[in-house]
Amino acid sequence: MRTKRRSVARRLYGSTPPTYIVRRSDFGVTRLTDGARAAPPRGRGSGSGLILTGVDPASIIDDLRDAPLFARLLDGQLAKLATIARPQRLAGGHTVFLQGDAADAFFLLSEGAVKVYKTFRDGRSATLRHVAPGQTFAESVLYADTYPSSAEAMESSRVYRFATGEFRGLILDEPEIGVVLLSTMAQLMVLLNQRVEELLLPVPARLARYLLELCAAQGSPTQCRLPVPKHELAKRLGTVPETLSRALNRFAQGGLIAVENDTLVVRNRPALERLAQQ
Image (cartoon, rainbow, N blue to C red; front, side):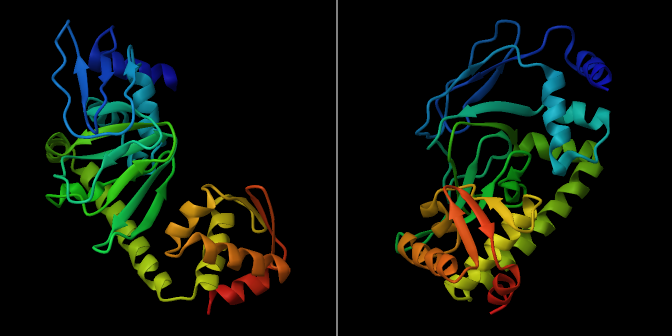
């Protein structure tokens, strides 16, 4: 299968894979071919850039295929998509974009972790989602002029950047890509509605829901690994670390859970499920 994918990549790019340079910036990724000179970087960024040379086109296609958003696409469609996928390495703490910035790209995370968060007028922030490898983020830029939220790399991460204009052009050639994107947008709307509903619940109920969903996502009904530090989890749940710690302690003292380092064990799932419904 990989031999077939590599042959698709060779027909697309030729025998020599393209060279990518990632600059120290938000979106400063330029593909260099035939000795072309890199364009000056643009945007802001707190993380350091990393030069990526000799990126194998077949590996780009594999990364795209592993993403649920693009899993239904055919080899030829993935090959076209790969031509506009710009790989970028981000250091931990790097600002990918800020709320209110001009929206000119969306991203696929292939390695690492990224958080998407909203900043309010009083300076407070709330984490909307933690992006895992294989997931896309900032898809709304295809229908908006500015980013409605901010994104930051939580650790060293690798992303693919898709320029809005190029992606729109690709959708005109490959309508199937637009169809799967609409499906993803619908799923994100459901997620945001759930977030709003959760904010109306007391913190223990929010925490119970999160833990049950986390265990299910990791394939076990009674055990899961906390993917983020507690202060990040507090932002995700719309509370402060002190309140989250008190809720976790009450859960542990009540026999609902046990926590060892970053691993959580559900001791009383029925009770946790009742609490999640409050």
